[in-house]
Amino acid sequence: MDDESSRHPVVLANLRPYLAYLFITGPLVFITLPFAAFSEWRKRGFTIILALWLVSFFADVLLFFNYSTTVNWRYFLTGLPGLAPLGAQWVLAVTGRLVGTPRRAFIVCLSVVAAIAIVFSFVLRPVSFEFIERRAMSKQYRHRLENLPSDAVMISGSQTIAVTYWAAIGVGKWKTIGTGGGWPGNQLFEVVDNYFTQGQRVFIDSDPRWWVPCGWQRDEIPVIVKLEDHFRFRKVTDMIFELRPASDETARDKPDLKRLLPENRPEDMKKCQSSRF
Image 1: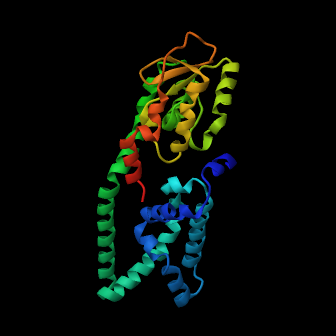
Image 2: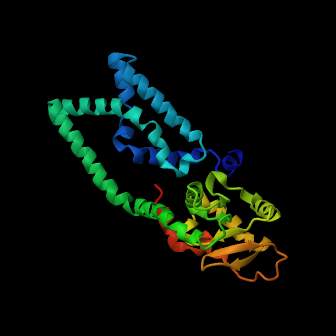
Image 3: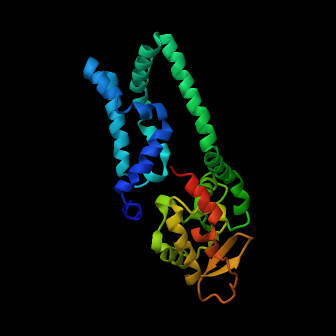
């Protein structure tokens, strides 16, 4: 975690994505944040629903100091269930004063929620669909692994989770050099050498779909590219290459890992920029 924190420092610039992701997880709840708690305290004092709100609010505030919050909006679901009741109560009360009755206020609020859901479905659909599609590919990733030794060590980018899953249910005994929190950084070359020393074979899946040039992997890809300076490669499939020691003269294939760099993928970089708020 110390290594990850140094690569993704907590700075004030993180406030923008922090607030954007908090808004995405619950737009109406986000809008009520400045008003709901103060209104409850002024009218009724320290109530149970206010206590629940405070615990949940500070749980989300603490997320600002977590290095991974700026790339994972799902973390804000932590406090959302506790923020929603007081927020809903405040929205219904304010709307009720405007439209006259609680029943009308409820209908108006439901309509607003539905409208926001429809708008978000269009705005976020390209991003969410691509994410879901990539995760769905994990199911098919087993077929790629069938071409490799059952105890292979895999560098598979975002499909690390697929390798871990299929190994965990007993399909194979694969190991991974992970991404994100499990990424060894510049120690990657030493990790690979250690596996060689143990007599294990290491493979990399160079499919660009598993190496997205934004988020965590933006900083990981340059290290991946440097593998070509430390090792030789033997082609297994179009995208999968076996890493070999630099002394192995029989391994002469070129994986062309430079094609994974962000500057060589303008279309993917556009997608990254459009997915940020």
